[in-house]
Amino acid sequence: MIAVRTQVKDILKESGLAVDNISNDFMSKLDEKVKQLVLEAAKRAKENGRKTVMGKDL
View 1 (cartoon, rainbow, N blue to C red):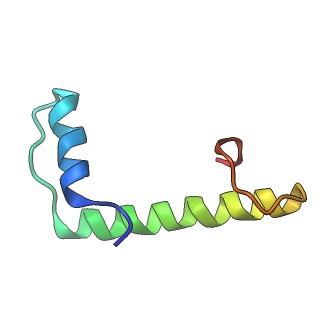
View 2 (cartoon, helix red, strand yellow; view 1 turned 135 degrees about the vertical axis):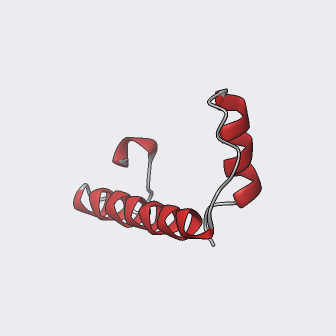
View 3 (cartoon, rainbow, N blue to C red; view 1 turned 90 degrees about the horizontal axis):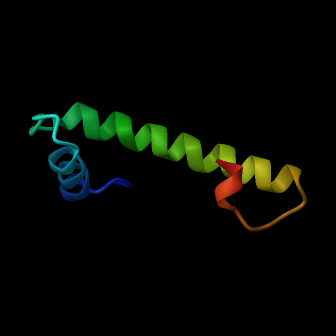
C-alpha cells in the first residue's frame, strides 16, 4: 500500500467536509492513482535527461 489510511483520514478530518469514513476500494483505487502519478513523473524526468524525479514532473 502506498497511501496510508490514517493520513487520508486526517486529511478528511482537516477538510471540514464531514466525510469521516473510507472504504477499502477507495484506498486501492487511490494507490493505483498514486502509482500512475509516480510512473508518469519518472517518465517525464527521463525524457528531460534526469535521473531525479522532481515536483515539477507532476
